[in-house]
Image 1 (cartoon, rainbow, N blue to C red):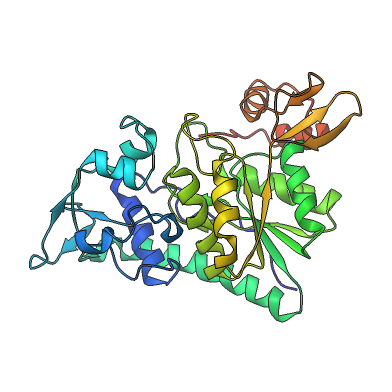
Image 2 (image 1 turned 135 degrees about the vertical axis):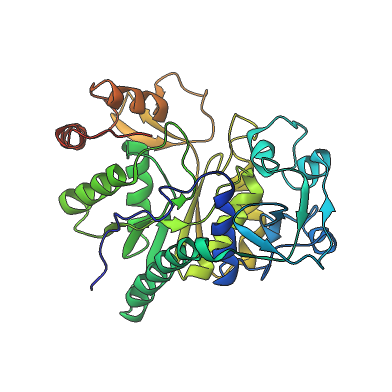
Length: 337
């Protein structure tokens, strides 16, 4: 098998309105099940109150990266309608809404990238096509491969999910959705080092770091379904959905994504594994999964934020592999944006 870990990140320098080049590439390459082009106002109505369609991809007007068809009508959207009908919340100050309307509230359905930006679209498409080809190679060899979406340096909670997937599939691709970066995100190179180290030392080279170029919307349960569609269209055999999948700012209940995925999972061909919260059991010194986080005082939460803080301060976090942490520190590189 010729599949290799991926270190190059074609979205590393994308920011602001350039993120719509990623959406354009995803649409052009057929990765979005229910869309071939950016939506107009009439087609958007099909997404309202219909989460199985995933996240709608819309294009704001007057972006410097696009040439617009002047004959196509533009339309205006209210924050309230998108808040309640797409994000299914009542908080118009939510980060997902801020990102959605970051370039204004007037949209249009027809535009193409300007010539000087086509190389970015091409590189995004190449990344996703290479990912698709790697999966196809594995499937054609009679093996199976699952996707695990995480943009974090792995602690024991992440390894719990990896091991669960490896019990059901031959290979696991650590498959983060990568688009514009935000302060605090782990650098792509550090994630590459982390999972390559784990794969070679603990998982018999069955784990690969292979990102997917697509945008995050922080759309909670609806976006969990969107992510399933992406992985099915890329060709994966399976995909893991965890607690608070694609949520932020504690806006959604931790189990909302799992509930909606279980409701619609029969609509998908891809096998879906749902994962409740993971804790360290101080009585048994083992990991355990439970949705009742406050049921036992000997269940200790594994904190990603504490782990990141320890890494930044060159301290050891007890709920992640010590040798992995020492290996990453030995690289003497900045780990986070």
